[in-house]
Image (cartoon, rainbow, N blue to C red; front, top):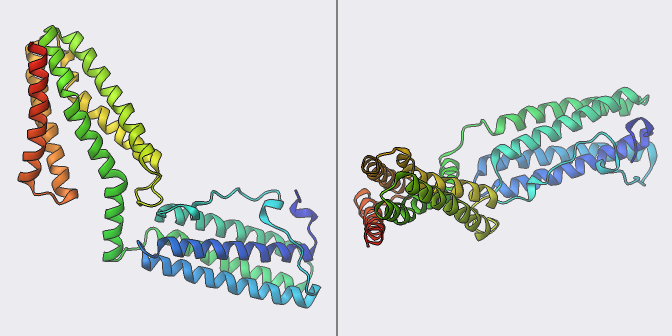
Length: 314
């Protein structure tokens, strides 16, 4: 790999051209990835792409005047000192905050390169152009940092909420429903069969943790999010797994009490709260009528609860 100090003025310009070409293509990918969900922000990245293309043309013109037509191939990955870029532009759907951070880092890196290169070169024309580009990259950096904090349009806000529901609420709700409902049968079966708080707690803990691991893997492996827009699978898996375990642990923890009757009474109260929370989430995020949500979740929970009692009492 080459070091910055080993570059000639010809190679400094050649690398600058390569940097502008790469940055322009990345901004084009950012604009393409954001155009459906964040059209106003996508236009800003399209403007940045056009600016980078203008920088490239100015560099090409000066290079041709000074060194002729052949441009040696020098890329950022051939140089020491450049930060390795994670290809976030290939991710779909694109996260606005991740894009903003990447763009700001790109502009900072390119600006610092121009500043160092301008101080090294002795050609007046090259030095002036590199200094001008460094200042323009500084403005781009400010633009990139302001994009994520910019006020979103109504359409963009709707899209952001939809993505939040797809990537966080849905897997979390699925986990909470499974943990709150599916663990009722083994927990209350153990309570009525053993009449022992410690043993019931062990059964509930095992069921909750096991269900959390199972649901987490199931959600993470269901799809990679590239076609459904549901985001990163491992994030969904973690959310789903944690909410599943939490749903089961909520009505398991009361069995830390020594009195089985007191623990069961509290556990039933916790179950009612859990089912109410699930019904509220379905109404608020899924637009399910509240009475319908309550009826659906309560009926399901009641059937599982009764199954646990019947099995434990037999």
